[in-house]
Image 1 (cartoon, rainbow, N blue to C red):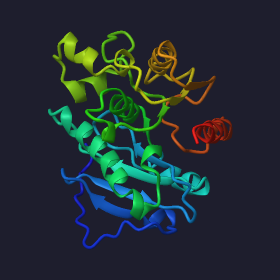
Image 2 (image 1 turned 135 degrees about the vertical axis):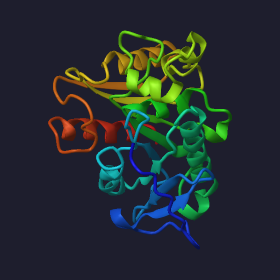
Image 3 (image 1 turned 90 degrees about the vertical axis):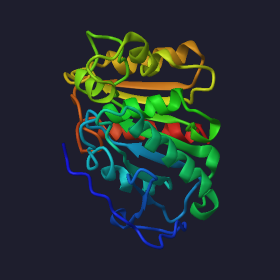
Length: 262
């Protein structure tokens, strides 16, 4: 498990100004977890809050977090990367950080020059599970995102055959009962207020079975919720924002889809 670094920031101003990718505003959540916010030169009101993956054992801040900064800023999207607390026996820790990050961004809407109704989330792998869970069991409207972006997400905790056991065990423990497994399976928690989603998968993913993301897509379809799914033949798992085959295609599709939500 990676070392967790707690960075204490003094007199941080969340003002809306142009920043380079390495110049984000770092702030601590109440747990001590860190969120880094990047503002484009001309923010258009939209925000993406990213939860990188790592199987709930570590947080993959590079390819599934900070590597997306340039793309987001180029599209005038305010971008935040959350280095959330790992569960380590307490399944509520990452969720609490994820929800707090959304509420904090919304509360700073004027300072950041963003629209609190356009705050979405993005997650990869186990971070995708976190993003989808945040989207389906939010405790209140202020904690619920406006849209969800999922890259090769872990979804179905209840399915012993297709579950990513590492993520499930790290989050819920090895002896979680069926009620708990189903409660933390976003495909079973979709309802009429679940936000729209954009989902990217690769057919040759041998880490997280593609059926996970497909199930979430189908659950959204059943509720007539805007959903877009893109499945590519190769790419496997963990590609994030690396320059891999099909990156141009799926990011162009993502940009178009996000524009339809304006």
